[in-house]
Image (tube, rainbow, N blue to C red; front, side, top):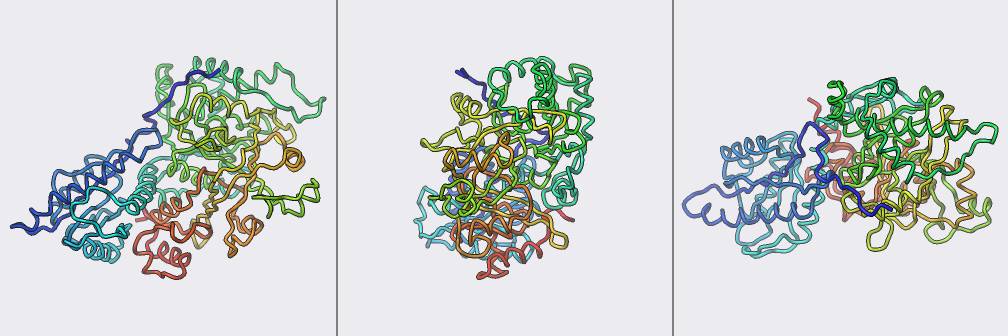
Length: 603
């Protein structure tokens, strides 16, 4: 039994430190009575925002977000530059300006080009904070520096010592998206191998990563994994410890191969050693391992500063060597033989665009993400014809079969819970009992040798129903650039026999999630079928929660338009300049704004 388990909260994986949020207290610069009467209130508001964000926001490694305040208010351009320099020294990656009053707009504004920005203008009657908010928003728009405007609906008293709920909601939405932008900057995508079976998502476009995400692309041939296995360029003690854990907790499932093609127990034991070694090596390739320097491999010990990676696998590797299914499943999970820790985002088939979608979801929610094929739409008529069961409830208009070819984060079982309901939680909130339940709900089936001639072990589970989830996908379109698709919906449980019949028509050794989108009755969300029909690629990322509004915030910060989403209009929050491109056709305005502003990092 997993009675206790180590929790790796506060782990440092990357060269860069995590960004801080900088709070900019802005004030009317007129000394002689005006400024002096406002500085106390202004600093109090700034501290309230800092305390609120530090209380509610966590970084992906489980540490609380840190907010930085200057020791003075900003009344003009000189003080604005002093704060710029202070923020730079302190590693600030997100800017939030706070004021209760009129200030000198373009003199006090944050002029940094790459820092995500928001401004809260206090809604009070004594001083015109709203007037400053409108003026500084106009200045930002005129200079091509978008901001998120935050303005409470209700008038407050000047001595109020709280942040209103609607302001809190907007602060959190902005901050989560802005932190994601700042965290991914200067990290790497590590492509292990090349293009898998002609899948376009594994054609890695370095310009996209550099111009839109501020990231770089690193490339490693798959033979590097083999070299490290053969030359034992890994922590051998960790491997032995990992194998003990795997033998105890990773239970083997069915072998789908005909008896005459099945391999021996001895061969399977060798394959286990191989695939566990792969997991350790791919992790080391991403973020390094100081133990390798101790073994005489200083270059290999550094890693590639990779926040995401992809493994080509099929077919050049998997036609001869064991597949990467176990490696991908365990790295993408919130735990392994070392304990509970932040997931490592690794995409099947080197689909870098799905890796980015997974990264977005992970940074916005701090949870593990499920990689999946958007495999099949099962209509109610087809389900009834094949199984004899007439779909009902959430499944009444059909379901989409989300299933990866052998690998998915074990968190995707849904065996973690929030308020007694299936969920996926940040790793530091997961209990040892929930880890054990995730492992118990998973079977590792030997690879179908028709697909994977080199063998391997696929993670097999069925996601519990009733979880609110959001699926997403980045696609690249020639002449348009990147576009993001977002669909909120629910996981569904089918009757056991129905699931068995439908699942066995594909590959029953692979992980399955039955998904139903929220329908709006129009556009791509007229029906479950139309969602499937309008999906832009063969893969998607599944994120726990209805968090499409957070994806919209992040996409607008990166200037990536969203061509398909079912987020209610009242939940949408974008930079104020978006309204200048149209207030009726919000989807069209999004495309026009992103095109006009251009990629965040393109010079």
